[in-house]
Image (tube, rainbow, N blue to C red; front, side, top):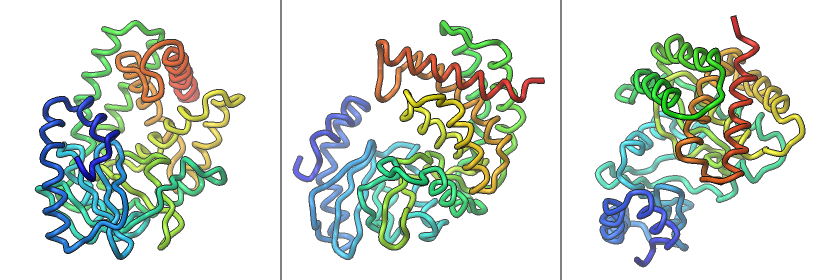
Length: 306
């Protein structure tokens, strides 16, 4: 398939089946059309993420072409709204082909960095928190689905989560999920979506472009931190301190982050039981991670009981 990395092709087919295979067959032609249309010449081997290929071109830019999925519909809108403030700059867009011409960043991510990770992410998050433009999807529109999925999972899955933890998660849906601020949020804010760059030390990539509560993004970041710090002594206390630091630097209410975390952790606990995790689809490691997420859901619920 020429410029299409083999690992990306396999992952796309494994995830999307025949639809993914058909798109991959069209992708070389899409790449040629986009390169010609924007007058670009590749300057290196194609890279890839989970859902798109990234082709370096001249003038420190890249072309990104994503699998056509609703989750990728508003990425370019988010980049346009930020205008390079805390995120890579958008130079061109072709929505029909799910293609963008973007500022190039380094492959090094905040996940690979050791110092001040939480403070760096929180400062960047604060800069990305701006009034939302028109036309973006509202996180609040997902509240009914969240409630339905929670009740279904609680009824169908074997779990040991106390009833008050489930009640707290459902309360978050009702009290925070259904009425959210008109703020642009990243929607998938975690360390691997924060890259080293030249224009600024760190820049965000791969936004979903939702309208909602900035504290939601903080819980996505903290959940990822939890998954990759398993084995650290007294990890729950470590995550509590990281939550407080993130809130302070990003100027968010830590109690609000904690409440979103209650929902996020219960959802993650159920997801892990059904599908496993990226690093552990089944077996003992999956069970260990599920047990830890359960414990975190309980710990982050207890301080606000009653």
